[in-house]
Length: 386
Ligand SMILES: NC(=O)c1ccc[n+]([C@@H]2O[C@H](COP(=O)([O-])OP(=O)(O)OC[C@H]3O[C@@H](n4cnc5c(N)ncnc54)[C@H](O)[C@@H]3O)[C@@H](O)[C@H]2O)c1
Ligand SMILES: O=C(O)[C@H](O)CO
Image (cartoon, rainbow, N blue to C red):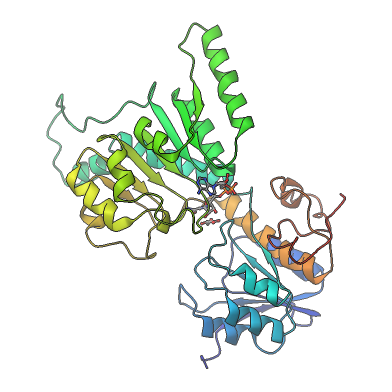
């Protein structure tokens, strides 16, 4: 059994025991729990990734709900431990929940929450930042300056790609993929090609309307196309950004074969999940194609990078910070806490997890509902009529 982990306790006499496996930004989430009679225990252990054993020790004998992180392995062992401790609620502080075995949660009747919506624009902004940084070789140029190598303007110095008029390809045009597409189309007048299992009518309408606006102002209109296959996107796009969920269908979606279909000077961005890209194949491709560039926020064996990636000048790598704006991270903490609280209090589940704004208004009490429970249907949880 793991040693007892260090914790910080708020409202020690609270009726319901809620554990957070990490300190989370802001204090609103703590206050909302305390106001509803929760004792809040926050793990303060100086270890970035907690093991299953650490979390079992945190859950202890009596625990009503846990707020956890995407680095943790929430499967049979943890859900059975939580259930033994009387717990009926778990929320990831993340929208992606590929670290959670939802079937195991269903088996123990544990509601699983996630945090959609509040991170859409922040994550899309990082994908856009990586796209620009890769197109204009900003990191390479910054390193060059700091190394004292700049000795005067040259016609060939750090020549990159112009985005205007090029084609942006989006794979997975859900909340984040669509927000990214809008930024790139409107901000840089790029044409759009996207691939998703579902049609994104709103996105298509947006690009059509923006194209008409440009035309009315005497400019070349932007265009959109829904690709019938992912291959079309790979072949046609100059910048490709990945935004699908990670599941069996998207594991290694980008591999040796798909990389070989992309343009030699294409840019690939991944702000979804590391295993969507075969990172070994990517390193090889970067090595063989120096004008191909990549911007990565996520890695196949996070927190590690595959051998060779760190040495590639045509790769920009950042440590899974796509949702890292203060407003978003505080909002994620709030949504995660309210998911757990809602189940503990027997509240219904919010009807539209894409519209979570009422939970984020700091000047009003949140609705009496869990903002987003991914297994609500499987557990037959009631849906809010608010
Ligand atoms: N890097 C980060 O910090 C960060 C931040 C937020 C989200 N994410 C990741 O981004 C993902 C997407 O988030 P979202 O809120 O946009 O989710 P979403 O559910 O709104 O969008 C995901 C889209 O992927 C599509 N999709 C699923 N399988 C596909 C396939 N095989 N091919 C093509 N498209 C497919 C879905 O139809 C959906 O439209 C999350 O699941 C998470 O893993 C990462
Ligand atoms: O899925 C998520 O929410 C991210 O990876 C972290 O914000």
